Image 1 (cartoon, rainbow, N blue to C red):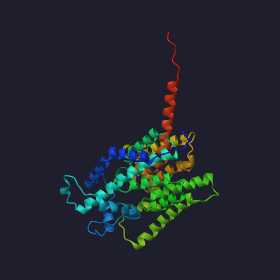
Image 2: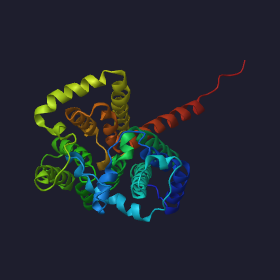
Image 3: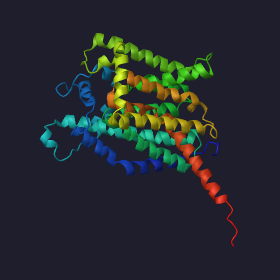
Image 4: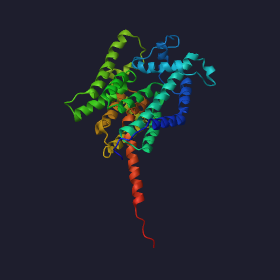
Length: 363
């Protein structure tokens, strides 16, 4: 694969983005409809958002585990005020206030824009960071869109915006200031951003440069400490609902780990948890092979399997049952671009070998 960084014109990015929106715009309407009719059980951050704008009668206090994701709620609020409102037939039977519908619409649009942003960032990671040809980069973008569907009910919450910020942190890893800002602010969008980068950079630091401490490890460490402080100080000054706070109790970790592990042994657990784990592990293996023909620099190391292993262990400890597979998808932007480029390179080599074969002489 070409190792020179391709010149990427803004025209190319604009055209790709427009084509992506034209091909996927129905995803926004589907998400909005599913949120209105509550087709998939999900966390109602929309009710949390109403508290920020003074709609107390429509709002609800969040659980302690969700309250610290307040930045993701604040990001949705501008959309609440600027998007043209519409709804679907049959909504009148639900007796929902128009402001409630408008807030659901804002969160649906935030999810859609976040998914589009993740797809375009994956495209740019492949195209600009790994010097991939346009067809391979488009394939990365397409597979990112398909794989993000594994977020499931998280698409009706704030998981999509979390994956988007994580993707941006990977893309801007060469810029220590932007990287640090994304990691530190991202912990209050979704704490898994800080957790993944803390495990990733701490492991890299231990293996490759134990004497060097820089922004790559300092930023996620600060983010983790801020999140820990918020968890300790938050309940002292604010009232939250109980939610699933007991899942964070250290004394429950062993029992919860065993419970989630046993969940994986069922057919439903195998499909929703084990298959996504296996798929991500396969992507890591393929991404590792890409280091043979791509200079991955700071964007990927062979030690980065720790991100998947670590997040899988954490989500087992806090007992998320059948949601373990979708939560593991947060590491997708780290592995997917290089995994696709490995497959693309193998396909090109196979195609070249078939064209270079000499035909047997005619008899």
